[in-house]
Image (cartoon, rainbow, N blue to C red; front, side, top):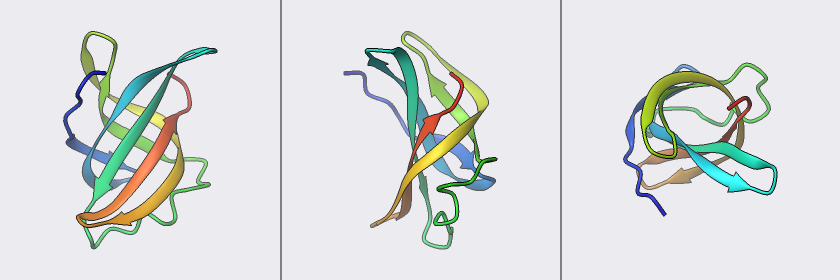
Length: 92
């Protein structure tokens, strides 16, 4: 498995660090991602939002690009550094 580095990014207009990465499934390649924001950020409103976007690094199989993509935030949890959001890219 490739190792990915956290990069400066925004999720739903909230600044933080994160990335999107490819996952091979039986339906083909899909993209998922992870995003971390500081303690003062409120990510709880992101799940269920139709207009959430991720702007930052999207890792491809052999390269990377900076892009803005629509996402579906699937999970938000509090972690030691603030909040973590997991998301699925809607059109990869």
